Length: 113
Image 1: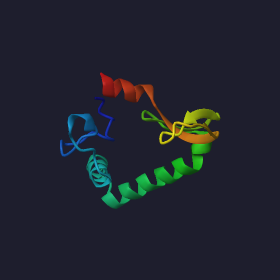
Image 2 (image 1 turned 90 degrees about the vertical axis):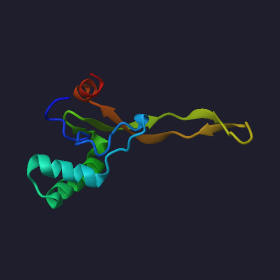
Image 3 (image 1 turned 120 degrees about the vertical axis):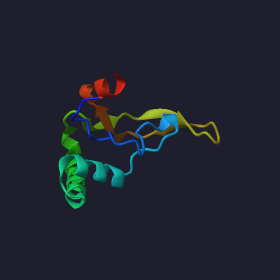
Image 4 (image 1 turned 60 degrees about the vertical axis):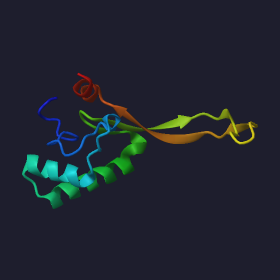
């Protein structure tokens, strides 16, 4: 894994791979790891993560990219036919906007290699 990959990389106290039965990193663990690696205080790292999240929320409509990680995008879903699982009756599911996260190629390469 590249040296610059510090989100999700840590000292073994948890894991981002829940398929192996290990726990995901908590926000507190993420903040502590980033604070240790960057030399910033935990309060500063926490504030930075909150500001990144707020920026992502406000800019998602235009597409919000975290370089090397991925991109948040809004996607329009068309109206479609579905089934009511209780009755089996055919229903129309209305069109809607959904949020998707597209993982960057660099992130895929780092995680899958």
